[in-house]
Amino acid sequence: MPELPEVETTRRGLQPHLEGKRIRTVVVRNRALRLPVPRDLPQRVANTTVRAIGRRGKYLLLDCGSGTLIIHLGMSGRLWLADAATPPQAHDHFDLVMASGAVVRLRDPRRFGLVLWHRGEALSHPLLKDLGPEPLDAGFDGAWLYRATRERSAPIKQALMDSHLVAGIGNIYASEALFRAGINPKTPARRIGPARCQLLAEAIRETLTLAIDAGGSSLRDYVGSDGVAGNFQNNFLVYGRAGLACFSCGAPVRSFVQGQRATYYCPRCQRC
Image (cartoon, rainbow, N blue to C red):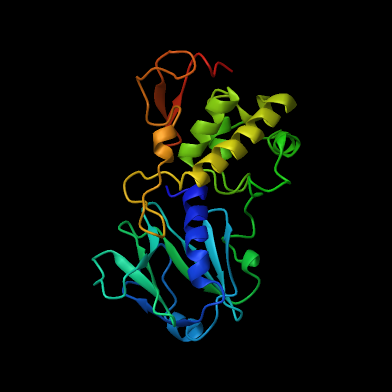
């Protein structure tokens, strides 16, 4: 958390305020994120123009012409348009100050996020070059998922959360998509046949699209770039519903720890 829908919602919210706009400077209050913020970042970014704001998996990519500003929200980060007159709080580690007067502020209490600069082709960066396909792109379908999972003995939910298989799917949306596809999260990935892989690919696409349309899921810290909370958490089918009745069959939703993360599923609807 935040996962692909939250990052995409943030990207779309920031796009009209950043694309084609000039950066005046950046303010770095704490370099000690998951990787240190480059010391010379203010000099590299000042007076550049944001050509485009893109996304790869859970990473935001600000194309500044001479390089790309790569931002990751970590486990608890949020990136939003702040009032320039509002004093930063303890965990507000980074400001992107635009010539227009807009301020984009990063708050990251756990400091698992990233603010990096890359001079070459953005997708060649070590953090990005080995990511799997985007689950909302046309190239991601059941046939591709079937081929990619033939050698994977890990449970399908853990496989979906591996960014080298598919980019951007985290704990929440893996659980939700598997429920929609009727697949037990414990099933070894390589045991899922072509027809069920097609169902799963469609369920992933549907789940992520609905979440983006709802502004993402606001659990704990996340809000969109406009400061408004997402509301997809109000539409969860299994995530966070342990002990409650399944909306489809009425059986109690169960939870267990899988790969150090809580997994939610319906034992009746997701038998295999």
